[in-house]
Image (cartoon, rainbow, N blue to C red; front, side):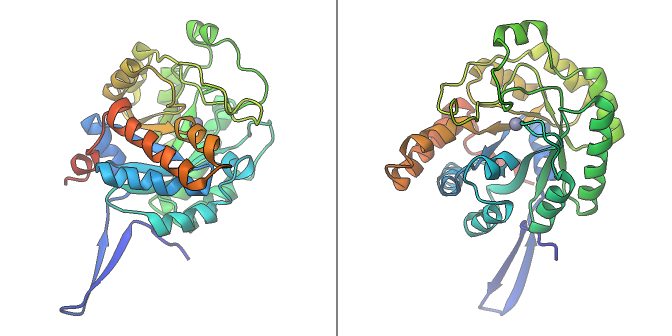
Length: 322
Ligand SMILES: [Zn+2]
């Protein structure tokens, strides 16, 4: 059975009528955000109790956001499983402000192992996830195209939009990161606009995660509490990609990027930004003392992200206005 989480059932008892309202899907919402130059943040949930303060902050500020889980968060962290996350989301969701997204399902994972990505993504679609990501970025261009195309075919049959990745957004791999300045100066691993053009044409992916200087927060147990390095973005490079492919672009590793870079990126095609480290670290600092206090720390950080770092408070009204 396929469940759609963007359908709302309501019964009004004065005239005994049953109302079925279909809320816009994530594909429509991201397209509208892209058109308006407003960014939609996606928040990773590595620990289940983090979801409540994230949704509460979105609702309290009238802001639209995605609740996300990545494969490594049920393997290396404590999010449980795709089903646990889905069940918690069903309890807490507010369709005026949230949708559920499956983040990174890598074909080759951070430990260099081949995953069961096709089954994982199919299961997510059956569970009612509103959008999915396939990450073939550790493959050759040719193979990334082949595997992404396969997932797009599966997902589009259920009207589910797909995010894919091209280029290398480093940081999740075990082992040390190459020196950041060297990465940025050489543009090594940056998404090529020519390759992106071919990739989008041949895969029909809905959104593309790009590498333009952004990096993921460290996830190994030894390094996950360290302060993330401040990354920069190659805005002219992003501009070129945006002019070449004209689909919504996604910025991973959203924590710790200078604000002036972020603001420029939202004007140049970035319609979704992934945020993980910024809300995970305050939670981890307090979770063994008090879950309640840890949740409040997440809520406080959420308000700062929405109001000050991204300046998107009230975005739901603009994006869902139609
Ligand atoms: Zn990512």
